[in-house]
Image (cartoon, rainbow, N blue to C red):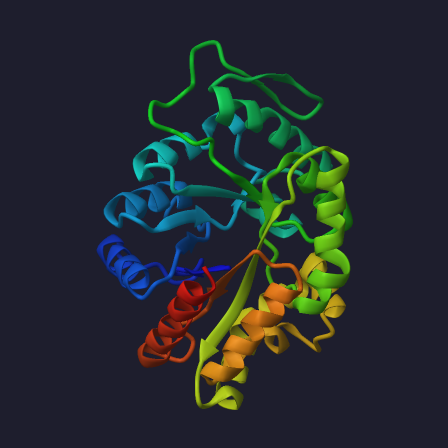
Length: 308
């Protein structure tokens, strides 16, 4: 199992040089990947490309880019792949109704249909540099060649899918999923079986399950739990997260934060692995301050090296 971390957040942006420095620190600690959320500041594929080019050996990804407000032909995934020497991973998401309608001024209509058409148009573009798709919700054609030299292998595409319909589409058309706040119970009993069955029915390989998990190595888990509750409160207002939190058997989002000493956190990582996660990416590792963050990264690096 490989382990990684999310760098930064949608609410606190770091200077680019600091982000590169932290990415180097993560790599040197033994972590395999660094992921970047999409915000209204940095463009996450661009940020991933810059960091990946500056930090050889570290895989980078976006987690995750909303399909509303984007077009398959304008997703800069191939540029990021060429810049990083094949170490870029594209994460996509449906976003939320509130964000889509208030920020983008777009109607949040037929999200699953849009996801299906977006992935259908994007896959050949990433593999061949060409697209010729005419759907009900979008059109994607390439009157000029769109292949980027050096963008090999084709960029893997993962979707922040957790509901039954999104899991079905992701299993059929994507390389994996990026569930967030989906605990081991939700993964094992609902998410992993659904996406795996969809991939199998479509004749595709078993999908990657990249579980995003808020977590910190700390000697004061009770003290950090309140801080985690504040940081994660907004997700409790989103129906898709409400559902997956309930399926996980947690009272709230903070109940899914992995907080404790090294032994406790390592045991939780194993639970995610046993539930079907192929990769675990820790988020919010800075909740306990710099010392706790370094301690967390050290443990995750050791676990990643030990588990391959």
